Length: 340
Image 1 (cartoon, rainbow, N blue to C red):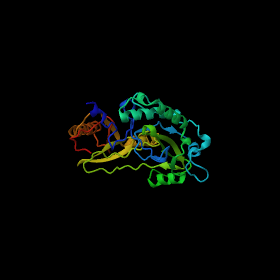
Image 2 (image 1 turned 180 degrees about the vertical axis):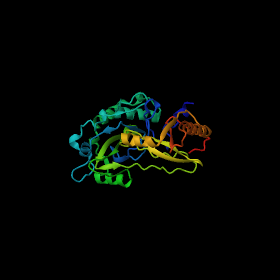
Image 3 (image 1 turned 135 degrees about the vertical axis):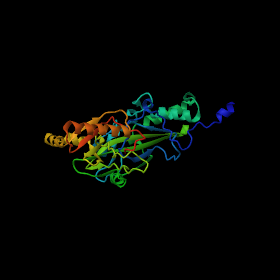
Image 4 (image 1 turned 90 degrees about the vertical axis):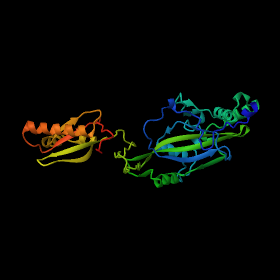
């Protein structure tokens, strides 16, 4: 039995990224992140090409564009580098970084502890079984690996021109003007390989910045398939704190022969922009009524519309130019309804 257990491979199966950190309270982030992400550079203390045993994504760091370019690009050529004069900056030092786990959003990062943890999981052994001399070598390596600026063995990165060109080519951003800026997340990855334990850890630094004189692009697929009933316009969350909701309105033209239905949409924001004279003009030529219901089907809608029309005509003894029926946000049309 012991031989069977010792021969088991405890590594993560191929095809799965071993991101050795949980999502805070297993809840995940709300909404959809539409900020483009670009891999800017890859650094390593070794040329070992094996897959990393563990991947850790550090909490994002927000930077002003001037600080970002000063840290990572030479002037005037724009070649990638890590500015040695800022080598001990908290933005680059490993010991100052935080990462997210299931229980805590800000856990202090330790490269040495991550290597020990990865080795323990990989070999199914307690970290206390690491020999003393190997522990000394590991602690010495951790002491020397203070900052991204101290990594010299292998460094490859995009220049500033290459980074901007890639974002433009991928339609992540487009040229703007002096009043616009494009929000982008740049990722710098560091792979640490500790040979005595044959263990490697990949650490991803994420820097979020705004590129001046550009703007973000959000291409969404809004064409509806034949079977789809969801025809709402794409909602753009980038640089927009408010979400505009479209409401459907059904306009009814009353005459002696027929009732004609036409559907149109108008943003709620447009109503807020109307002045008093415009609102008064609209109210003089139309009347507004609201149907409030948690659920409603097509037959109930027709009955309610008929009652409103008859009531108006009976009260005033004349035909109104038009009556607008507003469906508020709580109104829902059941799945068996023929209304789209």
